[in-house]
Length: 153
Image 1: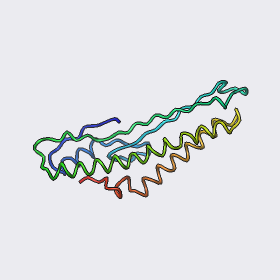
Image 2: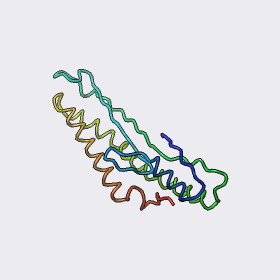
Image 3: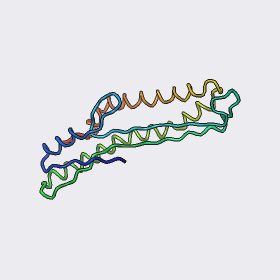
Image 4: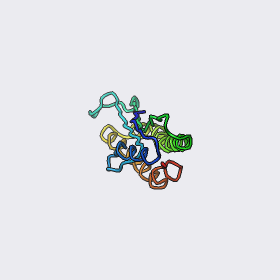
């Protein structure tokens, strides 16, 4: 988790803070949170015609940029409760991105191991395209989490 601070005591002030500090995705969309994943792979003989794909390894790194409200004591209980509901829903939405990437790490590894030395890189990249496509479809279907309650205020 990579947190960014958001201040304010009213819903409008908090929303302004979210709008000002929200992370941008590679396509330029600015949402309140963003999940970035990256896969790396290697195998003995990588880049040669004499590789050992059966010994391939795939690692996954996931970073989630997420807002952290500094929760000033001057904020109302209703504002604090609204933030708590929103933060839970936003976390649930981002977890959907994380879970899909984690679940598909094995597919990337299978694609590499099922390829040839010459095609392993392309086979892995094809799996990444599947994951990217899912992220776009998931965000469109949930309106970036809004249908899951990730909307503040």
